[in-house]
Length: 166
Figure 1 (cartoon, one colour):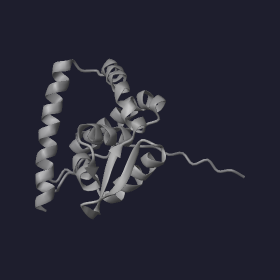
Figure 2 (cartoon, helix red, strand yellow; figure 1 turned 180 degrees about the horizontal axis):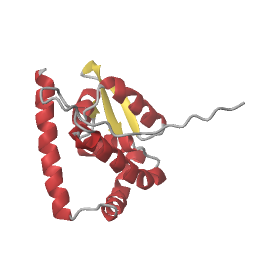
Figure 3 (cartoon, helix red, strand yellow; figure 1 turned 180 degrees about the vertical axis):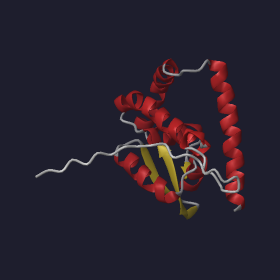
């Protein structure tokens, strides 16, 4: 015998007591808006990066390496906002895929240098297509995107300052 359980959702009103702390609604949370936007951006990139054999985090690593190579794992982590525990497995997968090489720095054996392989460098030419494809999916005008980018870049810098101070 199967029992069907009916579930219903209801909106819970905020406490009426003026002294009580009212938890903001989910749709009022800045953190949720940023989280949602990040997830949707990643989703927009996925079909553009899949033909290149890249995931979104791998794409970000390649962008950082094309900007500065070789880079230490620490430098990459700082540029990407990732710790080495997150970055190292990602780099190992990229190395196995032939996109990057990792080697000990001869001047300081404690440091690991990362740089793109020829295969990784060859992907750079495809980035125009990725950016053009992404631009087609953007619901904002170019000037609005530039303004949003400036705002978010400033916000992230201030958050990093706050995080490093604590």
